[in-house]
Image (cartoon, rainbow, N blue to C red; front, top):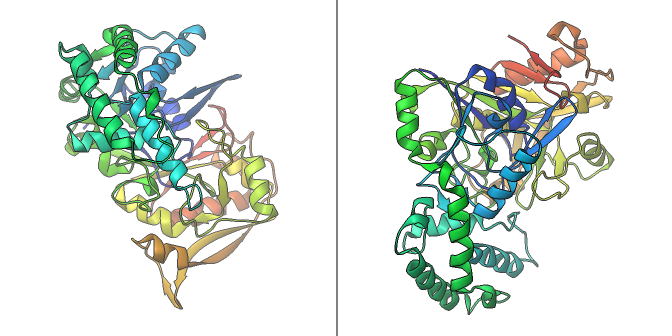
Length: 428
């Protein structure tokens, strides 16, 4: 069973890209299986920082095949720009990348729809969309009649289908306030996307067949999750979620590889919690400590640059997502940020309407009402960025890692003490 998964356990932005990059040398193939350009994976190699959105993090390792699976939604313009940026930085991209011909395509009407919907809720609580058309593209995927897969861009009826869908979208969106339907020109969109298709042609193929052949041949495959488990469209804090199954349950659906091939699942979490956009966040800090964590952790979105909401580690939430995603071990990130705090709090349970609970509520209205019950842990107030082994960590930091493992019910196998590749401690 040659496959391993890296899954985010919070609301995304857990530094999954760093873990994938570290592990890639042990694998033959790295796979992105869901999400789109709304994902932002930051990888630091030496003094170089790379920000990836569509392209799997394995691209920075020579000799590794990088696959974008059918569960991903692709914005061709963004992807081509990302490819060119990597080529300009001397990162080779060619036969080492495969794009699924089943992956769905983000079109301009998806972005118009996303922006109009966002503006219609401007006076209320915003879901937190990146306005990149991801949700509307997934909606069309499920609706079927207005959807395009990458392979459709090479079919003889592509022009006619674009014209038909543009007419339908103009009719649909004409009644929407702030929907800029005048920007949707069928001929221009076809010409633009035909050009994208030709530039992407060398990369497009049947990724499902490729991956099934790979696992049956014993190749080692690493699945790279995007966003986080609490943003899963079915199991997260709905409706404040993404458009895909971003927990471990989405791996097989988004890649085409049955779960029987998956040997190990690594759950990635920050040593505290962050969130972007609206939705309940029980441990959010609205005080100076929350602002300090944001600045120390450089908590601004890779994709949008938006400041992230910050709070204490929520063991109730992470225990839920660890079970949901079937993780074997935890990779706890950003330990260096907590080194600056004299005391640290961890949410160990919730108070819901006067009752102490240890489960994560399924409805956001209940989650809004919970009051976190905290356990206070002494800080270690020592620089950990140079630590190479667990023994190098202060006793307080080791105690924190042990307590997180106990509360979540999974061992901490990896601890990150800084953004660089070398600033990672393998605990096992």
